[in-house]
Length: 323
Ligand code: UFG
Image (cartoon, rainbow, N blue to C red):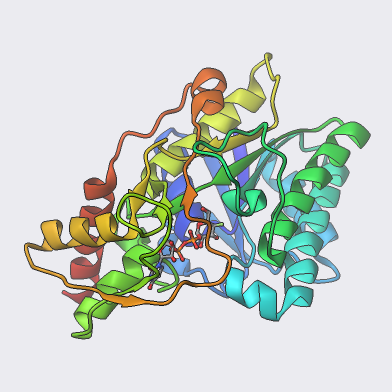
């Protein structure tokens, strides 16, 4: 089996590449190295290529055909909510345009199986305790909208071609499976807390007046290694016969508040942290917790790591980088 992993030099993609190689599968990585690092890719060929470039379809089709790829996992996309609000054109062009090229190349090369990185951002601000895939998506920012449009494109590609697709809606991804594959960007809560502490600052909580037990927002934090295993499970599902669903949530089913995440960091590092309480951040739902029933039932996947594992792995990866 050969899989072309687009965005395989990125944080999540490189974890999936590592697991595929460990299973003895062939992997070719395509990455424009705009946010990924070549050093994250060991044991697989790395093709530097921007999937949004005008000639990307032919180039991708060439690499798919010459490598004998039978599946594609597509990670490469922008993923910053705030940036997407400021620069929607960039998100339409790169996230939607990039996926259009990838699907066209798959059709051209006769590749059947495609796994796509979607996001819980498609749900917007859901007013439910547990988010199931049956909930109608209502994205509230261009980032979430590009992911939802991406899911429609997969469905269209399936109808037009001999293709099978899965979209994985990631909840809040954090941690590191291997220190050298850790997230080096400081965009999300766990790296933001660790960065602040490293710089001698305290983290800021964006609002403590939400309708939650401690007043701070609750999210479903999933370990990147668990998430990577979900991609392997998705590939196996596409290769099998029984395939009733194309969209799956990936989370733990457990919610943690911002204060609980800060407590976990304090616990793991053995220090006291008294955060600053700041104002609410626009567009934050009070609670976003995944129902993992569908993925457990059909992909046989369940997360194995809890919040302390996530934080510990992120702390260790940082120490490794510094030291
Ligand atoms: N937060 C703080 N202080 C900070 C940073 C974050 O209190 O300095 C809070 C946020 O308000 C939120 C929680 O921590 O309540 C998590 O925030 P993140 O920015 O880490 O993550 P989001 O939940 O906003 O979004 C993340 C990804 C999205 C994805 C979404 C899916 O960034 O791409 O998870 O659940 F869509």
